[in-house]
Image 1 (cartoon, rainbow over the protein chains, first blue to last red):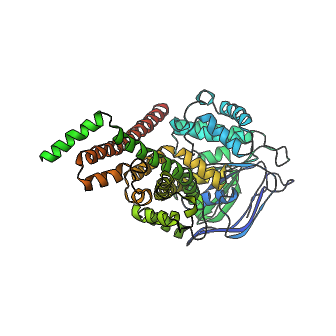
Image 2: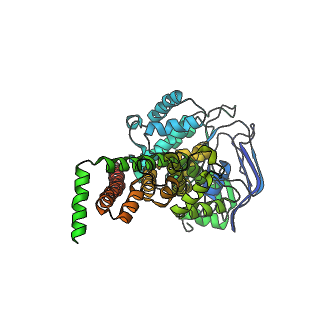
Length: 248
Length: 245
């Protein structure tokens, strides 16, 4: 089911074998076979409730599979961004520094690294500003800074631009592209860019950012293709309708 | 009516002339309730925050008991503490019965469920909304609970004010374990009860007015805090909208 690996010489970051996730009577994921390779940019697409967020939560360890097996390469660092980032009632700088402190950095060191990260996302001037007073786009950039500062090898993003206006969308998307092109935190030991797994309803964004696309329906993977093949090759009927915009 | 008018005039006179007996009672009341609230908050905030994020077998039963304790009458708490501290009770050797410490202990136990239950609710709601994101940053449950409690500090300040209101206005517990001893354990509520039964309405009324003023001040604090938060949040939303535009 998995597409051709981007870097077959190295082991996958994740190897999911028949993974399922059940919440009470709801089967959020079923029989997921998926390998995530270092350096690839994997987009998860599908209608609402198809299992994209659940899959990201499983990959980030926020939900434990109720069936199947999840094998994770040891030693790599990962971070996750959510559609609506949560910022504590504190300054932008403290929010980024807190993420680093929770990751094991000393507070003084965390503040220095946080300032650098804020500069990378264009929020250095807002460092002392309350994070809650920032706009939605700025908060998402702040969340990217928080993730960036931790130098992850893998970045998971759950519809990071879904609730943003077009201008903020472009800004965040540009930062995502820059982030993905940058070097990994090298927990993988490979000279590869950051691996990115993101969910999106925006097919233009998927074309621009992804190297591989996974289409989910009712918690199952229905198509797994390199990005060019996904948009130009044959697909199962539901995936084809989704790409045509006739299934949302 | 004339008695009422006369009592009110005498009460105002006692208040404005800084009557020593009256203000000693007021001071003791505030000291007992403030100490009890500090102790209850020290325990209740941490315990409530932890209960807000912890998931364990039997949690539902614990929460049911906690919520039930919210409604426990103060006389029942007083009776329980009396049994603990009485000479034949398990803590009788402490010699606390009919003392300031006994009243603090009783009010602490009275207020602890209020602080714990309300903190639990506030942190639980915050955890359902945002806990996963803190977890994704590496915050373990106890640290997550403390971070969320800190983040909800304005809501929790209201909880603390409500707890103080409960403590300062109760009469049953301090009457039983304090004994209403003049110059020693007499507080506003027990003094009001006693003076009314004796027919000394001016002192009872003066104390009642002070008690009302304290509760009014608490309510004004809560209202002010709410308005300030609304203004702050409003400014934040307006600021965000202006930046987005």
